[in-house]
Image 1 (cartoon, rainbow, N blue to C red):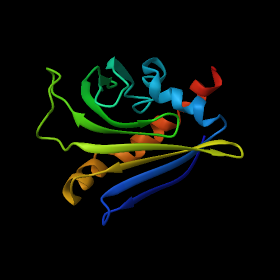
Image 2: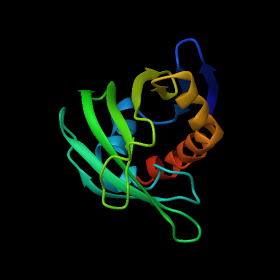
Image 3: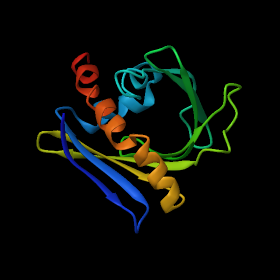
Image 4: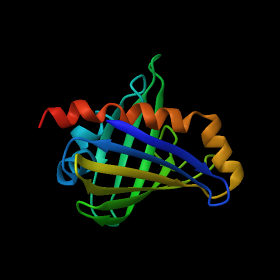
Length: 162
C-alpha cells in the first residue's frame, strides 16, 4: 500500500486519506464487507478491533470494540447510510460506552470510502466529515490521522491472503 496523501480541510470539516493497493476494487471492497477481514485492519496495530455485529446493508450497522495494549476497551458503533458495491460506502461512526450505547460526550462523524480502479489496482479514498471545527480538532488531537494511516497499513497483508 502506498499512502498518497493525508489532508485536513478545516473549511470543509474533512480529513482525507488516499491510498493505492495492488488489488482490484472488488477485492479491496472485501476488507469492508467481510467483518473478519475488517477486524484485521480497523484500528491501529496496537488497538486491534473485534466486530461483534456487522449488518452490511443500508440502514444496518456494526458494533465493535478495539482493545488497547493494556487490555482497555474502546467500543464503537456504525450506521450504514450508503453502499454502492464495489465503489463506495458511507457510515456514521459513533463512540460507545461500556454498555454499547452511543456516548453523547464524543462526536459522531461521517466516514465515506471510495474505491476506483487504477492501472496498478485500486485507489481507496477515505473521507471523514466532522460536525464542527472543535470536534475535528478533538479527533486530530486524539491521533485519528496517524491511527487511520497505521490501520490502513495492515490491508496489504489481508489482500495477499486472497
